[in-house]
Amino acid sequence: MSTVFRDGILKDKVAFVTGGTSGINLGIAKALAAQGARVTVCGRNPDKAAAAAGEISKLGHPAVGLSLDVRDYASLDKALRATHEAFGPIDILVNGAAGNFPAPAVGMSANGFKAVVDIDLLGSFNACRAAFEFLRKPGAAVLAISAPQAFAPTPLQAHVCAAKAGVDMLTRVLAMEWGPSGVRVNSLAPGPVDGTEGMARLAPTDEARAQATARVPLGRFATIDEIAEIALFLVSPSAAYVNGAVIVADGGWSLGGLGMG
Ligand code: COA
Image (cartoon, rainbow, N blue to C red):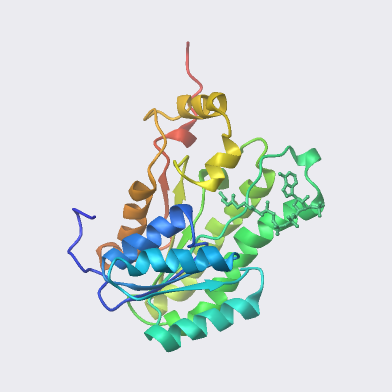
């Protein structure tokens, strides 16, 4: 798929992708597999995990689909050990598991706020913490799938804004702590992306979609492949000196210009 990278740039690498059973993260898992990586994808639904692994295997490399909840540290630890046993040392961790629903802060229960923060932020910490013993070597990379909500205050998204701001700060701290071991840690913040559950929830009608599109200077949503290409770059040796960065890929959506007419 890539025109920029050497073919097979991830040959013999092993990747672990949370939330990798659908949407952007499945697209990323496929992009990694297409470049030679052996990939484990995980998500809460076992049928979707098996189906995603089947899709990835068709690209010619073995893939495993596991069912787990990133809020459960022990289940992540077990899945990482299983990946290590099946494929060998883990080189790449993509933290894609995320939750979202649009609601005003006063219409959100404490448990609803906690559910999103726990999936996005605690889940990312859990995966990083559990994976570090496997990743700890030069050339390893962690990529958090963040969102522009991390730095652009967004009504109806208090939980996501808070969670993703935490995710990006976790990225920066781990980049400092783990850089000396050779492990790079970065965030990728996609804006609106077609064909995702997130956008189906945030812009469920044609009218909402048109309004969202009008706020993007490029005048369209991203495709999953466009975001996967950037993720591929960030975890590949092509980005060997990128560490602690938050790369925004939102068509200019978060620039939020005030306008004069
Ligand atoms: N509006 C308001 N509150 C909601 C809600 C909504 N649309 N959906 C869930 N909640 C609340 C629940 O009411 C519950 O709070 P309560 O116990 O006070 O009633 C809380 O969130 C947890 O819900 P539950 O269904 O038990 O938790 P969960 O662990 O399954 O997580 C989601 C719920 C919504 C966070 C999760 O299922 C999810 O995000 N799914 C979509 C995934 C997605 O869109 N991913 C892409 C992200 S960009």
